[in-house]
Length: 140
Image (cartoon, rainbow, N blue to C red):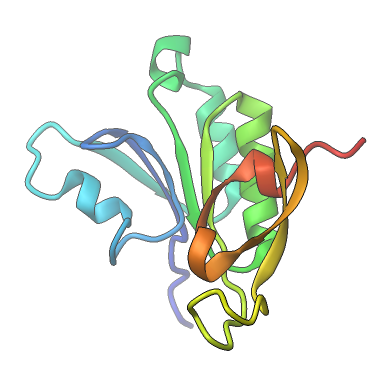
């Protein structure tokens, strides 16, 4: 039987504390803790487990946490929901099909809420990283 892999990582003490959706790679949790003797982090199998752990944090520790996520849209929405539940900043890296990757075709546009109202943004040029609240606003 294959060992289940942890998919969510919380960095409490590191270069940039937050909830990460991967360990390795650019922007992963490993970058935040590698080489730091006093790093504090933990891996979780599900977002629910991560949320349960966030509930145990003292307010001053929770104030140091941000969420960074990449992956399929339903998972990003779930991360945004967890961030909203705890009042945490959250950034999501969107994955959309890109025909030209330079913004000319507008094939990768997504609806984003801006201070001026709803707008279509191109993931290849305006992103791929967006504030989760702009991409997944509270339903009216």
